[in-house]
Amino acid sequence: MTSPTVVLAFFVSWWPLSTCGERARPPSAAVGERPERPDEVRFEGRVWRAGDRVQLASRAGTFKPADTGYAIEVVAGPGQVGTLLYGERRQPMPHFTPDPDEPIQIVRVRWDAQSWTPAPQLGAPERPGPPVRLEAFEATVHLSYLRKP
Image 1 (spheres, rainbow, N blue to C red):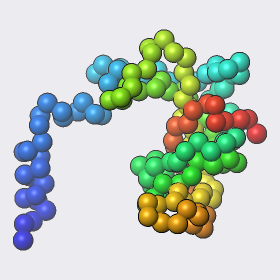
Image 2 (image 1 turned 60 degrees about the horizontal axis):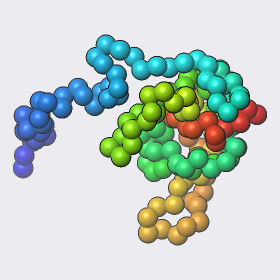
Image 3 (image 1 turned 90 degrees about the vertical axis):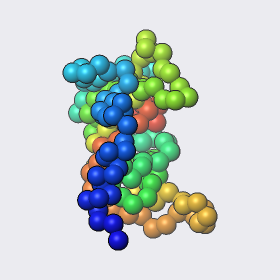
Image 4 (image 1 turned 60 degrees about the vertical axis):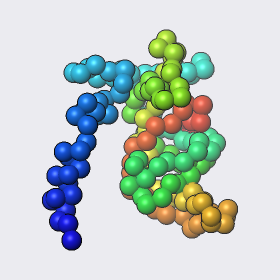
C-alpha cells in the first residue's frame, strides 16, 4: 500500500509550476493588490451599506458546501437573514467576462446561524429534506435577491 506521504509527494511534483498561486487571487487582481471591496453599494436606486441587516426576498439559488461547511448545498430561500459585509465585483469565468465599468451588483453577506433547507440531490425525490441548523457563514448574493427587513 502506498503511504499518504508518497502520494502527496507525487502530486506536488506532478502539479504544473505555472499554475502555482494563480488561483489564489482573482484573475483581475495583480499580485499585492486587493480587489475592490466597497462598504457602500448603490443598486437600482437603493443604497446598501456594510452593517445593514438584509433578508432574502426570493430564492437565490443555492449556497455551496465550500461556503457553508455543510455536506450538501442548501437552498438560498426567502426569509434567510444576515449582515451585509461589502460589495464585490463579478469575477471573470471561462464563459463570461464582466464589463469592467459595470456597477457592483454582488455583496458578501455573513448569514446568521439559522435553519436552512437542504437542496434536492440528483436522483433523489424533489421534495426537500428536513431543515438543518447551520452556524453563521459568509457567501455572496446578487443584490436583486435582497431586501432590508
